[in-house]
Image (cartoon, rainbow, N blue to C red):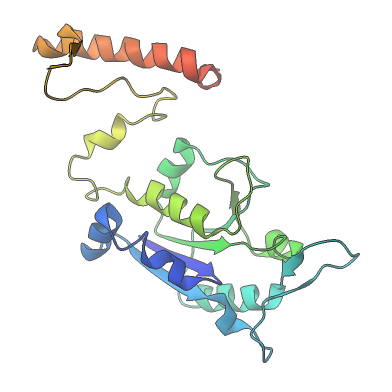
Length: 224
C-alpha cells in the first residue's frame, strides 16, 4: 500500500511514523508513506499557500493552485483509489471505513489548515472526506496520522497476530470485552474464574456476553 500525505508541516510526521508498528510496517515494505511539502508547489515568492476568503470573514483559506499542482503531479505517476481530505465538517471515521481503506493500493491524504481549503478543491479533486471527531484541531496532520495508523494496522502482516485486529472494538459494531493478564489475584482483585477454566467455549460465551453488555452500557448507539 502507498499513502501520500500533503501537508504544510512535513516534519510533523517524523515522530508518529518512526516508531513501533508503523515503523516496522514500512521497514517490511508493507506500506510506503510519502510526505509532500505543499509550500514547494506555491508559485509566489513568499511560498504562501493561503489567502483571504471572498466575501470577507475571519480566517484564511488554503489556495487551490498549490493543491491542484501537487495532486496532479502525483496522479500523473500512478492511479489513486481515493483522494481524502481530513476535515471536521464531514462524516466521522469508523472501523468499517478503516477496513475498507486498508484494502486499497494507493491513497492521498490532504491535511487542511486555517479556515479550510478552497471549495473547488473539495468539489473537483477530493473523492472522500473524513473527520476523526466532532471537534476542531489546529490542522489536519494529527487527523492524517490517526487515519494512517488505523489503516496500516489492518494490512496483513503488519500485526504479528492478525486475529488480534479482528477482535478489536467496533469490528462487529460492539465494544471489546474486558481483558486481563497475570497475576490472577492482585490486592485481592481477582480475574473472573471462567478465564482460568481452560474451557474455550465458556470463555468465548463470556466474552460475547461482556462485549454486548459493555456496548449497551457505554455505546448503545452502536446496536442500532
